[in-house]
Amino acid sequence: MHTDDSTSKKFPAEDFKKYLHLFLIDIIKLSSADNIQTFEEREAGYTHAMLNAYNYAFNDPLTDGLSPEIICGIHAQALAHQPNGHPGHLKNSPNFFTVGLAELRTPDGRIAQAINPNGSQQGFEEFLKFWFVDKQNPFHYIHFKPTKPSGQELFLYPFDSKRKKGLSVIFQQRQLLGVTSKTEDYSSNATGFNKLFASLLTNTEYKCFINILDNKLLPTSGNHLSIQKLMKKELKDLCNSYNEAVSKAGTNDEQILRIIVQHIKSFNQLHPFSDGNCRTFYILLNRLLAKHNLPLCLIIDPNRLEMLSTDEALEVVKKGQQDYLALMNNEIPSIVDTLNSTQLEIAVDPMELPAPPQAIDSFVAIIEENILSLKSNNDDQNSKIGTHIEPQFSFLHQLNSEQHHHERLMTKAKKLCGDNEHFMPLLNAIDKKDYSLALRKASSIVNLPLLKLILSYQEKLKIDVNIPSSNGYTALDWVMKSNSPKKDIEEATVMLRKFEALSSDEITSNLSITKANF
Image 1 (tube, helix red, strand yellow):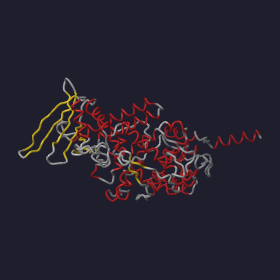
Image 2 (cartoon, helix red, strand yellow):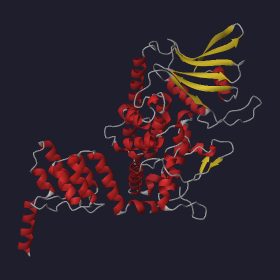
Image 3 (cartoon, one colour):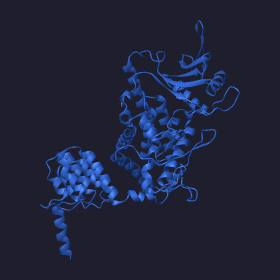
Image 4 (cartoon, one colour):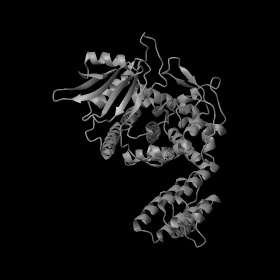
């Protein structure tokens, strides 16, 4: 969303990194003075873990589609600083998440704004249909807990008899002599149930919790392994559903965006991890957007992708994409909480990230690649999602500098080489900006990942792939004379040929032909 200079708040391009915290926190919390430092104080190492999770997610090309392994890998990185959150492992016991509706009212009918609302009545209706009605073996239940000790407690369970599917509502009342309980069964579209459900959802005298699994729903709940197996199966089913849907969508960007949002919602509602679900699926959301050359997203509150309707969640994501594009134009995004009855506007201030420079630079590279992919597509693609990309970003001018590409190549090469001293000559060549020498070093040992990396910067750093070493060998010569496996040699040769690499004999032959013609 680009606005006129007279109304937009611009910031210098060199300050761009000071706004990266918007990708890492619940932006809504800035309204209550929570910032990246507050997150860091609550969870030491939070920022670095989130950056690592982004970098992990974006390093996977998703060529084989989305999988539970990728999702667990993102979670492992995002929760690496919190061992009690079981990073990378699916939950082995039941858990729940809280729902607050934007339509909350007091008993006398006054609007009572929920703190950070993450649901709506329409969102609940979609939730019930997907997880209670259409689900073969449901495992969610809904708990309405009274805010007053004397209040009546309600539990909503799915039931599936031979004749019909629907919902069982258990009413419990705590009394001096114990708890009285009664159960009523409703079909999923019964007028009586709809009226009861709506009154519960919007009543401030109740708190609503979505629970996943308990003794009543899982006969073998004592076997923790069975819960993990169930979560893996459900996660795989959702991944397969996503992969199939985007495959059928082809190049329809609006449809792809809707599919992404629908499935991020379902992942959140599955709640497969004991902790860190929202942050994991927020990162996954941006990874899937980038995969389909769509703008990334600055979500005001990732929890809103839990219980809003798909249409409502779609609007949240689209607004987040507009805020992202504004940031790319060096504009401080105008972030407004439209679910708040007062249309709360959230102030955004620059902040330094408490994380190592290398992790920050790797994250900047993610944004660079997304912006460059957007620029390579025409405006028609982006107009479908209500966004507009400016012909030039001052941020991009900084990113496209030779020094920036040099630093990016060096950072990525170090990551591939690790602490192996065998690669020091190659890293030294990159450090001295002798990229042709670095290419020959990678070719001499036929290291495919390093070859691919260096060649990916061929145009940006103007790397001459045919400069020979002192013995006359070109990069292609080193590959062809290598003792590496035949398959690797063939792959490396194809890789180099794409960049018009020649052997020394071919160069000599070409020179002879040129002289003869002259």
